[in-house]
Image 1 (cartoon, rainbow, N blue to C red):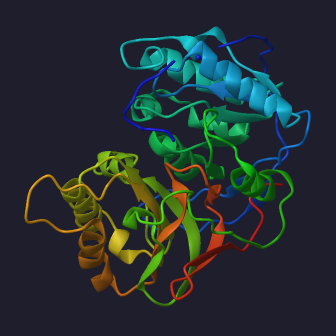
Image 2 (cartoon, rainbow, N blue to C red):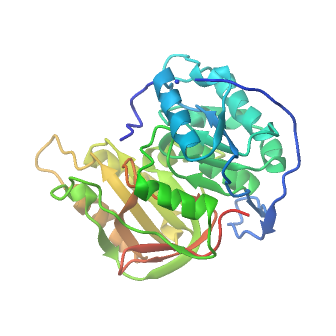
Length: 352
């Protein structure tokens, strides 16, 4: 399990830098008037033998964690590549802001890198948003995968370039059978339609944070956007604030007291256009049913109080978040949710 707020460290090598036009599939994207319209860009699907570039845009990693990431990916038939900066340290960051931004841009512009995987989250991605070259990313599209702190990169890159990005496992994630099966169905062997499976996390029978339930019934369709609530909350009012209108918004969190989840969700509702979403799917809010003061509200009651009045389809407890049984969610892809059955289905391929 990955704690977004803990910090760790990680490394290995190879080099080859150059720009190249990548073949892409283009489709029209619908966005609100406030957001510049970009055509959707579908990155190439992953194939065995592809090179996955490893980056640390947020917190530090250990050499041991890097080695385990490489071992896992190579066990799946991929090759890996990283620069020395993947093990850099600058306080609680994996290098200075410029180092982390340069590392990510190097992976996008490196002709020999086929996809990019964040080794961990932590904190720091939001600090490099101003340092990225979005034109270069648009000209050299490839899949970017991660979650938690990586939310800032996933939402911003999609909205600035139209490139489909992926809320999925980090390098230090477990990649168990459930997680890899979904990773495979979305990124390696995709179909035109894909209904996500659900699997409750082991040993959570008596933990209400892992329950799956309906907040509002109904069906909705729209493009997917979302991620970690605290990261999305920190982007409010900036040039990178996400656009939720007519979207299916997915949300997750870890290790926050219930009142703080309440406060951040309230802020998203009243400071963004989240109220205009087509529907909301919530993952597991692990370690968030925390109440140090009495009397208090349960996590479920706080969420229901805030979201039920929206009157749009809303589900809680799908298989994503800071958990081992994790689905891979593509930002920008059309999907359908069913609040009655608590299901989510992709309506198009996310890769070319």
